[in-house]
Length: 323
Image (cartoon, rainbow, N blue to C red; front, side):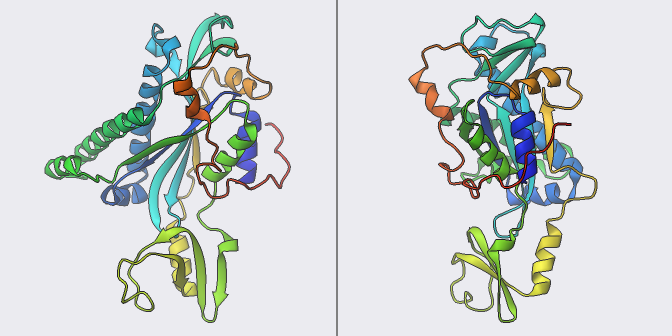
């Protein structure tokens, strides 16, 4: 966790604004994502495609650019767990908040709010507000349900009903955006995204039971203290040793799979990766222009301000050497 976050901060993410996008889907769909890697990958591809389209639409500097030359830069973290050691497949995707335009020569640094490097020009996004996120959520809901129907995992009538639910189970959040200069906050965010499903400091023994303190309150059927308060929420799990092992075993990802993946200009096979990751070493050259008050607040929240667990942890291991 610590090494991954330090490496991504020091050697991968350029010194540009980074926004976290989080997607959760209904429990009915999580079952297939948890047990079928192809389905999980399909949902992740749809999520990234919609994010890319939204960023392109909110980059004024890229309005006249060829869409084929516009690329995002993202690292996706696949979480198969919830805060109470439960199975909950969802995604945390850290995306550079804008698009990179591939150019034939050296990018121009004269354009407002554009960070340039040989072969690439960065166009920052603006105006990503609650309405934008709601539109992304609506688009994702339609496309993901359509994909599940196409795979034969969901009946078309059920998909139509799920689209009409007031509380559909689809949730998209993009409220955390890190400013270009705040590398410490970026590392805290990446550490939160790369965290494991289990924390030893939350586990203690009480007699023959093991008590695990959850990150959030949870509700589940109980046969002892909470039996008379069905639906009541608690912040601890009371488990036998075998029950704890059973929960942890269910969260182990399939063999030979990566818990985080690179996309766009940050992908290993991208011809622009070396140019973009080189911008992590030195401050990006961004022209100083008056900021729009309606958009500058988008990247003002750090993960600590947004209430993420572990947001205040400090680096305790040396930074990894570049490879």
